[in-house]
Length: 212
Image 1: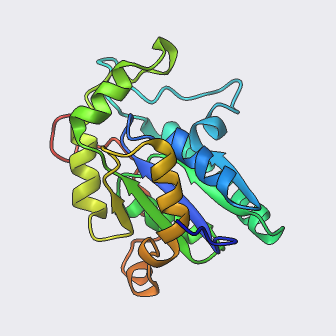
Image 2: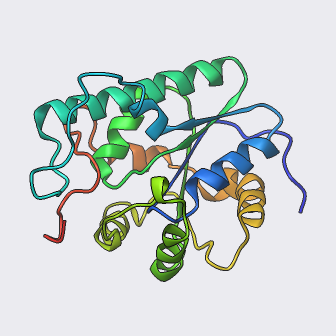
């Protein structure tokens, strides 16, 4: 496979836990001549004190007003850092869970770099569950993310490049993304115009189908 010399724009890799976002985004960045990887979780963990609990008393995702504000802040920091890298000639590769159209619209309202290349890693759920189960305990996700997968499909199914990586190695997936994302993952201007923008931010893990 012939890899391009560079990848213009900003690459956003998303998917459920166990989809391979962290590993694949790192491998993609390593295969580009000038790239930076931005992990959304790392930006969230920069808060040392004052962090809002994102779960309610029953362990369900329910961030509340302060949690929403902090999630927005995290997204804004990721986008501004991505723009800084892009202006310096580095391809930003963002690893973050994006579930809803309003989340993606909020990202696009804050991100200046274009085009946005959206790759949704979507291995079969049993594959993602197996990968999650074999993680180190401190990185393992303890909730059922099947509703998240359904919500992503419902909200983002017509956008970007949905890549079933279930039968690929992480290296194969990364090389495929580097080679073909510019043609297959672009969020077009028409699609951007149809997305909700700032003010309509709704974070991920929402109980759209009543199961979270």
